[in-house]
Image (cartoon, rainbow, N blue to C red; front, top):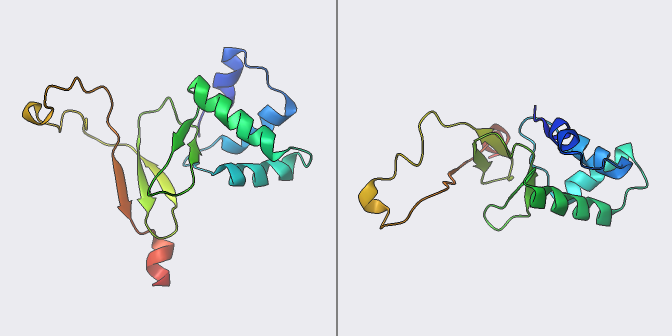
Length: 139
């Protein structure tokens, strides 16, 4: 489970009812919701929450570095609360389901020095693609 709520409280970020509900929706393992999915789940907990509040709060969380904005294959942006836990993603090319994966080796070390072309590499983003069990079963 992510520690998003704890991190926000530790930062002293003002947790209004709307912000708290959005953070609660995002809290968990393998959470990669779109803004519309966050809104739909937030409405179940706080019916008066607006779509604008969700979009604005997600933007603030990304700007704070507390949530990652993930985009793959031209699909809708997804929001990942595991911003402080190193991981990569496994994405279903059928339905778009996304899971966090943790590599056992350092992906930066896998890039040979001669393939860096003089770059001072600071970040690596590895995304694995395949088909989830549900999509495989449906085909």
